[in-house]
Length: 497
Image (tube, rainbow, N blue to C red; front, side, top):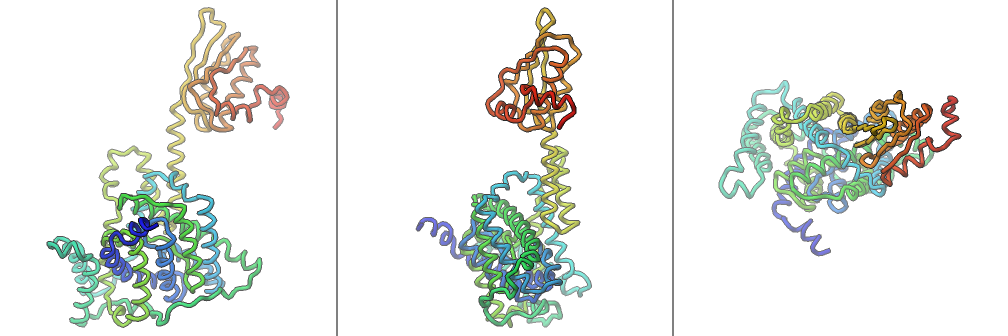
């Protein structure tokens, strides 16, 4: 207990506190922007980001990862808010949390191992592009001052760490915000600031049970939205956890993260906030700024509510150009540039999966759909590849009246037709031995193929013997096979089903 506390909370307090402050400053305009996307008051996104970050710091399975209101989740809320209002959104947020906790107990976080590296890379690259694209409205139809401020901010972010000693002590994104805000105030520049994004809340959130009737009709309205929010939230959180695992060279508990996200969303819904999940951009800001422990996530949420409630007059003066510079840094740091360089070395299938994931996510802004397409393509390529690693070798005895077929490899739906085609049923053989000691049967389709082979040989008057089948294959064949069940064979030959 004490060792866990020290490792997760107190191993790196100074860097965690400073990183948390940087993340809190970057969270403010994003939370407001996501609220606007969802069609709700800015305080809904800000309260959600505060609650989710604080709760997940205790309940999450990935120290140092930032969770808050996100754009991917906001996009799913638009129709619900427009047609039914805020109270139904709060109820859907609570139900989203319940579904995520159930997913955690069902250990659905473990399904991440089925997501291939090329899908994760495509997901990361697509998010980097979306993060950059989200900054374009702040860089179009503006004066030259905005471009100058953004360029200066990027200069500070990349050059400040090169300074001796102090460059390693203070996170450069924080210095960027402080310096750019001071310059903007001193010169009296007429550029967009955080205050122009929307009205900031002036009170702390209070406990509110969603004001909706507790009926089946209400459940029918909110369940489809809650299911979608839960799925997208867990998917983005699991992907982000995997990326932070690699950045920090540490592991995480994906199933605990599912439960933690659920508890955090229930808390957000009861405090007047919208559903959220892990944020890849803010998580990378946190890691790049030195944040590694749970203290950085807790600090981000705590500083956020302090900033918006008690220091709103200062916060409103932060130029959006400074935050745009930070998010451009995030998009550059997030994008896997090595995936472009390595395209010549990687197999074509890997490149197709990665590019397809990027294209679908960027085109639809739907992370879940992009990952689904990537996983589907990766599975098809894998099945096709493994299906080719199956071969059948035939030998005849000296008399030419009996033969042995040796099956080697994996037999499943993708290779079953290849298996049947490898046998010659027109040969006049009295005895056929099928050696399966180097083969493995995986599914009903492969068992059906074996049935067809045995039955066709027997129809030609050939005796068939199966030898060497391993225990796992034998279990599947005994359960689903029909070649040793005369009634089933007769029914099949008669055209029955």
